[in-house]
Length: 447
Ligand code: ADP
Image: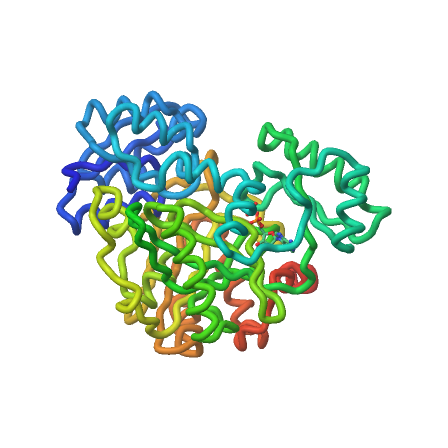
């Protein structure tokens, strides 16, 4: 086992990893930008190294500075968290070239799944059901029209190198196709430096269901059920739950089994998420994320497992600490993402926290790097906390969420908390009757 791990991230996820390290008796090294000198992860880690100025390009994405920080502190492994370098195959290669361990899958698996066309081809080959779409990349408008006519409108045009819900365009009919296609291409070029796009059938009312998988890199693989992350704004998740309210135990075992077999066959190492759209009882693969997800705590809650600890175990060469048979769903968990954003436009709202009080009590977990007097810098993501509740069933989890939101105090800035208070009053949220378009429609009508 490692003696010391460097965490190449900030905010709540850096704390999350430090906590796992501490419970395992592993020393932790925080890295930070100059803007984050007073951040909680810097205070909480055993050691901290400044790796550059405010901009993430010069700090949290700065390969040489991060590798140097490992060498200076003697850290043997790097946990990337999510975002930043977590799915950067070039970085993984460099980490390994320096004799260090990347806590995550191989560079090859990250590359394979990071290119969405290759990912879909791989998924299909491994027996995972995929969303109908173009055969690989679509080079021009004529090819786009042909592909759309074959699969039928509406269609969605997506960047091969895409991520974070950006660079997707829908065309409802042929007259919209040309403009959507050209816009998608130019946005793909400017956002991801690669203008290749592909097309899929645009599903009208699916749910977003994702399966948590874990591989030991030695041919072993398990699944930890699904999460329903259908409540999205601009293709970004805001409210996540496990298990999915629309998924039966039989469906869980079936789709979970398919995913677990696929990653075992790949020889995949570590945590991964296989994302699907789910409509009329059918699953359609859209992508695989090769990292720990923001919403992993809901899975931890219902399975009683520490996924970060498991990532570290597997990265150090050990086998998974649980078998599929030992993994049993217990109750229901919900996570809400609390962002420093001002409603109704969700405009970023960084600033100084004058008072912070985290909710507590049975079944409540608050993952946040906030503290009284902390100043949220304007340079990074607006996620400032995740409130996770766990109950014996969905109604209990909902009641607990409402109670916990009432205890939470974040003064000095605006947050998305009022949104969740409003959503909890909605019948569709109470019954779990929503799809990926529900929230956008609701926001339009209510905010
Ligand atoms: P990203 O990597 O940018 O997050 P995804 O491929 O995971 O992109 O898609 C993100 C979201 O976009 C999905 O959760 C869903 O809301 C929507 N989406 C993607 N593909 C389709 C599709 N074929 N039909 C309808 N909605 C889609």
